[in-house]
Amino acid sequence: LRTPHMLGANVTIPHKEAVIPWLDECDPQAARIGAVNTIINLQGRLIGYNTDAPGFLQALQERAGPTFELRGKQAILLGNGGAARGAAVALLDSQVETLTILGRTEEAVASFLAHLRQQTGASNLRGTQLGTLAARNFLIEADVLVNTTSVGLKPEDETQLVPIEVLPVATLVMDMIFNPPLTPLLRAAEARGCPVLNGLSMLLYQGTLAFEIWTGQSAPVDVMRAALGLE
Image 1 (cartoon, rainbow, N blue to C red):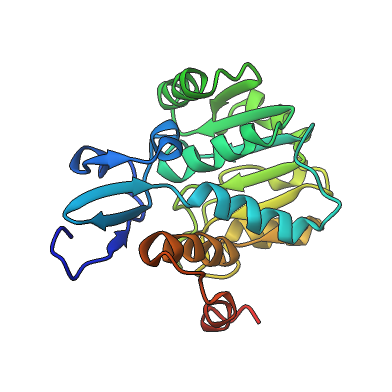
Image 2 (image 1 turned 45 degrees about the vertical axis):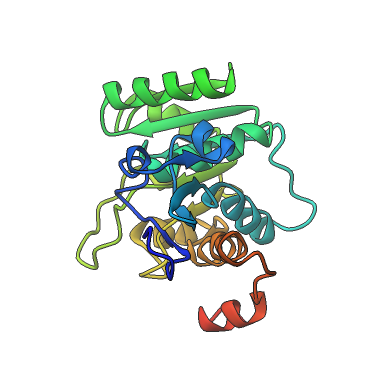
């Protein structure tokens, strides 16, 4: 990556946190998030950025419509890895009323919440282990539910992380996975009557920002949108 002909690279799950010690510098927002998905090579120096957070917000806003505001909403994230970090900071910066983290273990959730409190100063955070009664009660209040885990990525994986039947039908359910286009989570949410969104438009918008970081030029958004079949 440090050789002159390399503009940089994208980083995907599960390496978004692990890559940071290998970089020379991080953009302030990426450092705050604690995860990098875009690297630029500046004359042999590797600088890390996070375009997931703004890409996530743009995709969410596009799906929800121009009148939708995250401010004052109840948001829930499934997972506590690198993708969750970007989404969490984006949601907190958008002034959600409460951000809830549901993870596989209490220890992982507690560690993630501590990181978020340290980096953002947020006091509107809570979390618990998936599958608990507390998790179920949090879901009943959700306005936005986002899966940041890789559960649903494998075709044979029919795991349901949460009981979709307790969600309000107005809950916007997003899965950052884009292949398959409808994960088990999104299929269940759609059957429930909830508006759903997969990760393809987030892929587009984080990619347009990465393109601009690498080249210093405006991204060919229409070309990239068409390449993803989003026309």
